Each structure stands twice: as C-alpha cells, then as structure tokens.
Image (cartoon, rainbow, N blue to C red; front, side, top):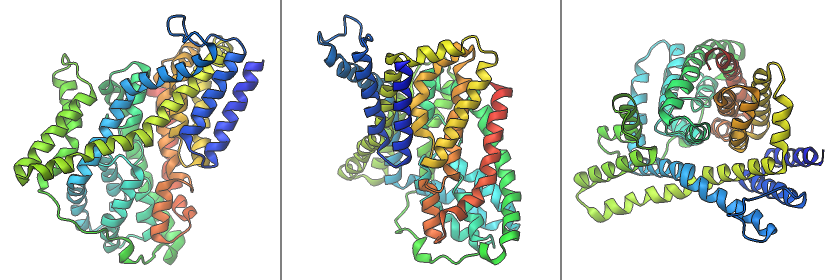
Amino acid sequence: MIEAILAILAVTAVFYLIIKNYQPALVLLSAGLFLLIAAWILGKPLLSGGESTGFLFLDIFKQIELLFVEQLSVVGITIMTLFGFASYMNTLGATDVAVSILTKPLGRIKAKYVLVPVVFLIGNVLCLFIPSSSSLAVILMAILYPVLKKTGLSALTAGGVIATVATIAPTPLGADNVIASKTLGYSLFDYVFLHHALISVPTIFVMALAHYFWQKYMDKRQGERAFRDIEQSTLVEESKELPPKFYAVLPLLPLFFIVALGVFFPSIKVDVVILTLLSFFIAVLIEFVRKRKLKNVFDESFQFFKGMGQGFTQVVIIVISGVIFAKGLQTVGVVEILSHSIENLDGAGTVLILVLSGAIFLFGIVSGGGTPLFYATINLIPDLADSAHVDGIQLALPMQLIAHLTRSISPVAGVIMIVASVMKVPPIEIVKRTSVPILIGIVMVVILSFIVL
C-alpha cells in the first residue's frame, strides 16, 4: 500500500511540475531519486552484490551512475550524433538548399486550396532535414509564407498548416524512434519502416485531406479575419550565400545508408552512429574539395560536436532522467504491483492502449507536448506489455505518435507560439486551425494501432 501511495505522489508531482514549466529533466531526475531513497528506506534491494558500493545509501547514486553510463553508451551517443550531424548541415546551408528546392515549385500551383495538402506533405518530408518542429516553423514562416500569400491563401490557413508539419513522419533519424526501437528490441529499420510507417503514413495522408476541407471551411466562416498582413521584416531571415544545389542531398545521407543497407545488404550489421559518422566525413571531404581551405572546413565541422552537446542538453538528459524515474518506480515495487493487477484482466492490452494514449494526450495538451512523458514511461512498457500479453510496440507506438501530434493543438507549445507571434494573433487562433486535422490524426493512430499492430 505504501508503495502505491509513494508512486502516486511522485507521478502527480512530475505531472504538475512539468505542466508548470519546470525543467523536465530535473523534475524526472528528482522524482526518480525520491523513489530510490524511498525504496532504500523500505529495505528494497537496489543493486546486486557485485555492483554494490558496500554502503546502501551510496548504492542509490551508484544506480544512477550505472543508468547514466548505460544510456549514454546505447541511446545517448546515437541521439547526440544525429543532433551533431543536423547542426553541421545547418551550418553548411544544406538544409536551406533542401527547403528552397522543395518549396520553390509551390508558387506555380494556381488552385490555392490544393496547396494546403501539398504544403502539409512537403513539410513532413522536410522533417527529415530539420527534426525540430520549432526550427522548421521559423524557417517555413520565413521562406514559405510569402509564397503562400501570393497564391491567395489566408494567413491563418498558412499558419495552421505550418504549425502541424513536424509531427509523425517516419524517420530513423528521430530520437524517439531510436529510443523506442532499442527499448523494445527492434532494429531501427524494422521499427520505423515495418511498423511506424504502417500507421504514420496513412495518418499523414488523411490529415492532409482533413486540412484541405477544414482550412477551406474556416476561411469561409471567418471571412476577412482569416486574411492578415504580416510585416515582411518579421518573415525574412538574414540572407546568406547558399552552397550548390546538390548539397540538398547531404542531410539525407544517413537515411540513404540506413535504407540501402536495410533493403539490399541486411547481413551488414551497422548502427546509426556509424552511418552518421560516415556521412559527416563525406560532407567534410566535399566541403574541402569545394573550398580548398582546410582550416575553414575544420572550423565549420566543429559545429558537429557543438550540436552533439545540444543533443545532450535537449533530449539525452531528459531520456536518462526518464529512465531513472522509471527505475525508481520499478525498484519501489509499483511496476510489479501494476503488472500483477492486469495479468488476468480481460482485454488488458486494449485498456492499456487507451489509458496510456489518453494520459499522454492530456499531458501533451496542457504541457505543450507529450514527449517528456513518453521518454519517462518507455522503459516501463516491456514489463506492462508482458503482463497484458501484448507486444510492447502496441503500447509504445500510439503513445509516441500521439505525443507528437498533441504538440500542434497545445496553445503553450513552442511551435504554436512561434507561428502565433509572427502572425500577431493569440495562440488559440492557430489552435483552431490545427485542431480538427490533428484530432482526426489521433483517432486514425488509435484505430490503425488496433488494426495493424
């Protein structure tokens, strides 16, 4: 009984503090430490004899150390490498070239509302180049908005579409996909292309269609209020000289290698880190051949390592803190209690899918995104799935996709606030434009999870 009370207190505190914009990593880390201390006081075993420090209280911090080392060596280095590569591509201007090439043909489309689903689909492709939803929103508001305005689309339609593009595109370069595949025991290729894509790709196309009808309806309903003039100075970024057009391929090199090896050479066992490092050195070599200035090339390439640091502070530390929180719940005995309670429950898998998806939906709405909760709970999924007699992916994948989708209907999410601030409208006006396509997407995710997985 005391274990359940402690767990409820810890989980409630985590929800409340993250919703109140406290630093998620430190909230999860503190909650995990609280639970580990509680487990120590209750006499629960913290470490096996060989790993123990010899002093039980210090075993708490030894456990944290072991989790840090484990996550950094497995998931952490992968995420940091991907962040580093993305940062280097941005420094080279390769991502700007890709955005320019993909968005340039849009101005030729004369039927303005046809642009709505097209822009949405192109934006999902751009997620492969720019994984951050906020960064992508800034770039698209600067580059794409003027194009959409010239075609006659309303400002709120353009903003609504841009605020939803970075959601659930299936990419092996996504940090959450790396974490989920490792935790659930799938290869990254299989997880993304044989499971994730079966749900996310149909959902993206349905959302594109929903955008078409919803934005058209909202323009008709709001009339002139939907058309707003935005100062050009708020849209135009500082211009910079772009590299040759073939540089647009460079950000996709890791993805190309992953797919090529997964399809044509499955016997070759390499991970994302190896392929990303290979892509990095290819890009450095191309830069040297183009510029012939080794010092400048090396100075720019150091951005790769700065980006790795950003990956640690933005994602990896949250993941590690989530693992420590999950370990605290396991050590205090709550996961075992929960597993036993659902072991013989009829339809336990269905109940768990709906409960976990609902929890992450509500958390995402009030906090600006459900990914911190996903990172905090992913390590609990295998045990819960075994108790419910379902595959862990049936629980994890809906949670993961809904965690991303809810970001675009939360008025406190970064991407919503960025678009709203550029357009000088309340965030709720953007949410009105994103709500129906996103909610339809969430329903599609849940339905397809029951059908496909």
